[in-house]
Image (cartoon, rainbow, N blue to C red; front, side, top):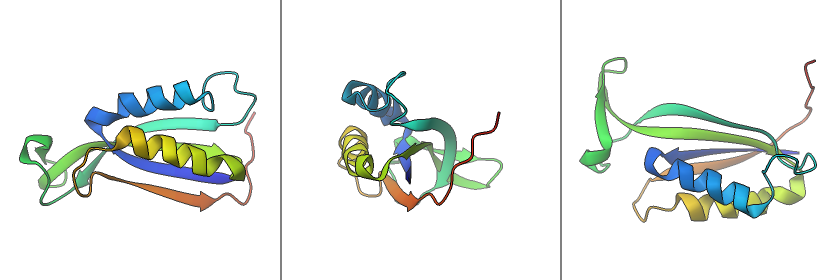
Length: 112
């Protein structure tokens, strides 16, 4: 199994989620192919970003960009397709507009 973590700019997250649903891989009832789709709002310190996308974080005491971290656990053979879907939908044309990381999952245990 693989875990995909994608850091996506806030204006692009709705399009990424829509693209994942449209792919048929992460829709409800997709026969367990795309587990634990999670979206978390995050702030990333980023210099050189478009100033219109930055705001000052009182907690971090520096300019930040609002992003979302998307996490998905999937079978090994699906990770490449999911990464392609995410990368296309998250594309902004700007440098350092986000990141996608893919890691191996050694074990997954369901809590009941």
